[in-house]
Structure formats: C-alpha cells, structure tokens
Image (cartoon, rainbow, N blue to C red; front, side):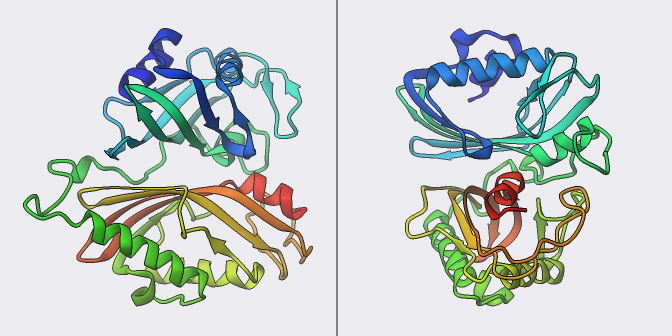
Length: 304
C-alpha cells in the first residue's frame, strides 16, 4: 500500500500496483475501471499538482488476509482547473487543502484487485470555498494508530479479532434495531467518535447517542448493511468495515449551515451509499471509532 501511495507522490503509475481489471469505488457513487481510475487520477493531479498522501507513517494501517486498510491525511494546493460541487469545471481557487483520506483494498499477488476510496469531500469543499463557512487547511485532529501501534493489541498473547468483529456486527445489528444505548452498541463509557461532529470535533458517548437518535428520527429505516458486510477487516484491537448505509427521509433532517440553508423537510426519498468505519476495541467495547460517510451523495439522493 505504501509503495502505491509513493507512486502517487512521485507521479509514477508503474508503482500503482493495480491489476488491469481492478475496480475502484470512489466517493459520490462513482465506480471506475482501471482506465477510468487513471484518467480520474490524472485529472486530480492537474487540479492539485502538489497533492500528496502522508503515508510515512499512515494515521492507521492494518490488514487481514488479502485485505488492508490505510487511513491518512492528504494535502495539496488547487492551482489547476477543478470540478466544482455541481460537477462542472471551474478556474483554480489557489487555495490549499488538508483532508483525511482512506483506502480499503483487496490484494492478490501483490496487486490491487478492488479498491474502496473515501475522502472528506465536505472539508475539501469548505477549504476551497465551494460551500459556505470556509475552514483553514489545517490537519484534522483524528483517529490515529500511532499511540497504539506497538503492538497492534494491548494483549499480544491473545487473539481477540474474531470477538471484536462479532461485537462490531452485533453493534450494527443493535443500531438497525433501534437499540441505542451504550451496552447494546458495545460502546465504552469513554468512547471517542470521529467524523460525525459538524466541525470535526470529537464526540463523547452522550453526544454521539444524541446524534444517532436525531438521525433515526429523520430516517425511519436507517440501516447499516451488516449481514453480510461488503468486507470486515480485523487485526489486533482494530476492526474496519466496508458496507452500505441506507434510509428513507420520513422526518425533518437538521444539517449544518454549510450543507443547507435550513432544515430539510421529509421528502419520502431514500438513499443508499457506501459507508466505512475504523474502530479500536478493548474488552468487547469500542473505545475509538472513525465514521466515514458521504454527505453530498446522501443529500443528492434524498432531494436536499
């Protein structure tokens, strides 16, 4: 994975380590074959000639079997034409970006065969001035493995991967059933939740439970696909999931002012998007979790 990202930094496609038939799942619901992925990458490099992932070290990286997850910051300056939020090309903004980025990848024989990519598109758009309430291009204070990296588990002689993956699935089943309490969701009293706060603030237990209740009031059938996941990855104290999130807007949806001028009334429309998580576990409970959603695509599908 690091070699592939080094290839991006050096603009050396020979080091991308993708198979010719690799399928890449991108934000906004785009699914690319290899030719399309390379062209999209070239377009991105043209918009941000100095764009680079910060992969030495990654914020988080681990794997299981043929699957690996890498979570990092990416930085760059928009000095070339760029696609705006409506998909049309606009002149360069001259502004810098600093956003979080994740890859969940399947490998065979040292080559990528499937790649699921998430990027914090909302933060990018705010930094570029495409949506209201601009924010500076400063790093996100987010989930990191560095404090827990040696070793990946606090109990090297014990293997809790299967238990942690089962607990992760059980947590999502509780979410789907509306059992929104710390015990049912396997949340530590001191849980730290990343990726949900409107301005990248880290949420604690009560704040996050309130957010879940609000969303379940807005979306009557809010569901995390967990039977099965697209992929669940575990190593040491860590799990990651690649899945789908869906729901139907049957109540009023409150969103930050940079996403909509006012609350969005019930439309009766549904959304179905890729959804990713990375979590750290201790004694059967989640202590840290990064939630990676796709707000722009959700809003476009529900008519917001």
